[in-house]
Amino acid sequence: MESALPHALPALRAGTLYLVATPIGNLEDITLRALRVLRECDVVAAEDTRRTGQLLKHFGIAKPLLSCFQFNEARRSRDLTERLRRGERVALVTDAGSPGISDPGERVAQAALKAGFRVEPVPGPCALVAALTASGLPGGEFHFVGFLPHKAGARRRTLERLASCHGTLVFYESPYRIARLLAELQAVWPERQVVLARELTKKFEEFLRGTPAELLARAGARAPKGECVVLVEGAGRTGAPPPGTETDSVP
Ligand code: SAM
Image (cartoon, rainbow, N blue to C red):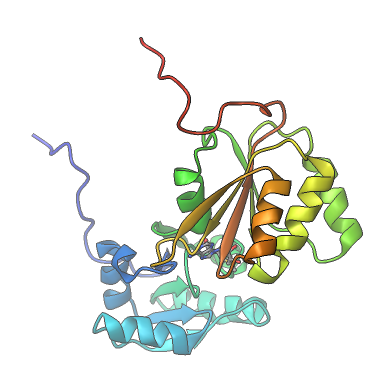
């Protein structure tokens, strides 16, 4: 009888692009499958070859590395597709987390698919999933925004467009712009609960919860440092009891 547990796959397939998730701060989060793919592939395309070289070295893996970042991804897509045509097994990683999620990977995947090659995800760490998982905000329906545009008008228009969205809103933001984002959230949704998930999976991981004004007051005293995911409760949920105070429903 077949085991109920998922099982390991056979050796890597020729002419396949593997999109491999890597740790967002804690090396223990690398998956066994990610290590096997990185060990068995022919080449690793990396956002930053030096950084990925260090990751591979940590796990005792030596592999040819090719750079693939925002500004050479279009050209690199052609090189990598050519390698797939030769039957190579190509792994693509970014600096941290899942490729294609506010990171390079999308164009390479599209080029490979268009040329008829197989593209496989090797799932693992992803800041948005980690943040949502422990935020206490609903994870059943959410809208991943990623990074807002830089310009003030475009940021405001994006927030206005999201105003009626019922799912939890998930933003990526640079630590330098967190206070700006909180001020913008205060202007549009002063009542909504916001969660700042910072330094996920790292030593100083923390979740700060409150309205934009409450978080701004705390940020004023001590600006949040380190990488951060910002989550905002969806439309129509304002006033919901804070996480931890809800009573479980009895079936
Ligand atoms: N592809 C990545 C993923 O799967 O999460 C995201 C890459 S994006 C360029 C970087 C952004 O992700 C950061 O600005 C921050 O918003 C978020 N991020 C990445 N690592 C994080 C961490 N350890 N803690 C909090 N946020 C993180």
